[in-house]
Length: 490
Image 1 (cartoon, helix red, strand yellow):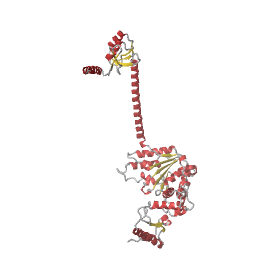
Image 2 (image 1 turned 45 degrees about the vertical axis):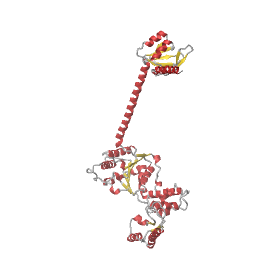
Image 3 (image 1 turned 180 degrees about the horizontal axis):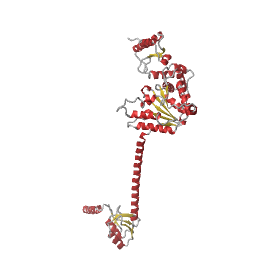
Image 4 (image 1 turned 30 degrees about the vertical axis):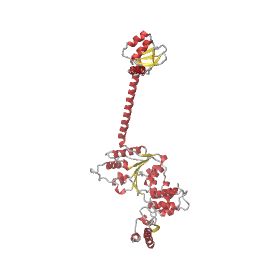
């Protein structure tokens, strides 16, 4: 029994090795007639193709010379592709001897069409790439050419919603600027009398007093185009760019005359000349020279009014502030008590105030506040009201907002009794001395609750007349000194 099994195993291994040379696994079975049958492989080799053509197992052949391959069709409808040699004659002779139908397929036209489409696609890619590069280079060229152009912010008339009624607390400055509006609206009244429209109006005042707001109100009242630009936008690293931007700005303004050109913080380019590097031939002075020429040069600038704002009028060049350039200089100072009350009333239009709030009283408690600081006071009070989930702004919220602006955020109360007692003695000393001196400022509040960096503070209300006039008496200075030193220390 054992020799028979060994012979069967050797026969099976020899058949596997012979099939492995072609890379195809085959299985041997037995037909009823005893002839071995080979199953259809997953791929067809060249020698197997010739053998099956001769045996008649292939019903049709399709020869593709351009691809050097033949497609064999079997009786069950399956098609197999086999690679052949160039100018292969064995396939032809085998098909002829087996009388197998053979057709030749010419794909040269398809290859030519595919090559043409490929070339067209490559050309399109090149054209698209070149167009992209040309567009990028054009953008770079436009940026390079527009580097010397000004970029003023032109406000349409519909966007200029600020009017003189929205500006409060600076009535004297408004009256001066109302004549500028009349010049723009009814120039014939002044031309008939030989008057000329002012070339420039210089607004001078501390920060936050409403200089920019006044300029917007003039444009809104006059109904003319409004060009807005910061003076620092003229100054660049390269010499000549600022002067070119000034020329471009006035060219655009002349096209839309009558109009208003507003330059904020003009001291950035209007400082006194002669202090620059290289004998005063720097970029800032080039820009200033061009501005002076455009304002009062050989060319007439009728219908273009230049508004400028600064809080450093002392550093401006004398040629810039002379008559004929900035014809009018309007001081926009800090508002007085009535002005502060009017400003608070303007900002209270859009905020729900409690009926117990007296704006005149809060105007009296905020001496020296500018319009921007009063707007911040109302805004902080509204934020505090929303944080406390209330519907109306009361005096408590305004008090908290005032303390936050003047002293800082509140901190945790002191836990040490000795420190609290010492701070209480110190603050009550300030308060008692101020109450005993008639020349001292009026006492407003005393507290030992820490705020900001102070463990407690004593707040006074400065004399309104003293702040407005700027005159301080010797008795007042002595009273301030005594009150300052009135806090006892251990």
